[in-house]
Image (cartoon, rainbow, N blue to C red):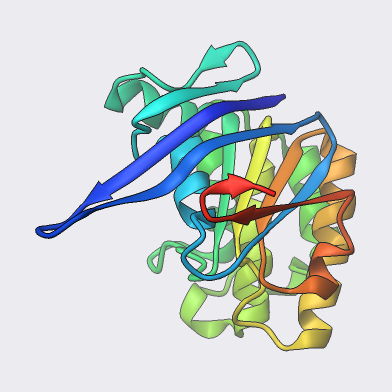
Length: 217
């Protein structure tokens, strides 16, 4: 599903060059859920952004299925995010002017893979049936996160990337959301790579990898 080989990334400041990733190797299999842990500043979010094509690596290779992400042009990376990836971040990033129903269907429709039966299953499993006509500002944080997860999974992505997706939720709600995500990922057959600082949440997933000083420890 996902293969990352010898990935490097540095950032230059006025005084220095900081090596964030120094040769990262990582794989995620179809249907597998992987927790990515590490100290603040260890490069976890940078790695997710590179896999999502939101930034460019200095060297190394990222392969998703049959597509080599490293080397793609901006428009090709945008198409990859639309067609192959689901993204869930701590800030939800719902579209304020769209209802819950339209937010849920947004990515699957622009990807040309809207599946009403699958979306209805997501709505039921995520407990969103009574909220479909509401707008994001009318939802709690936990409800918004459920919508964001549903939107990301509605297009049946090959890989779901999640960066601290439960960071704004209380512990009980976070646990409930993570159980749902794990089950839905297994149900859809996509892979999951999730950044988390929580040992408790990391233990819920199939496997954990730890990023330290720019390398997978």
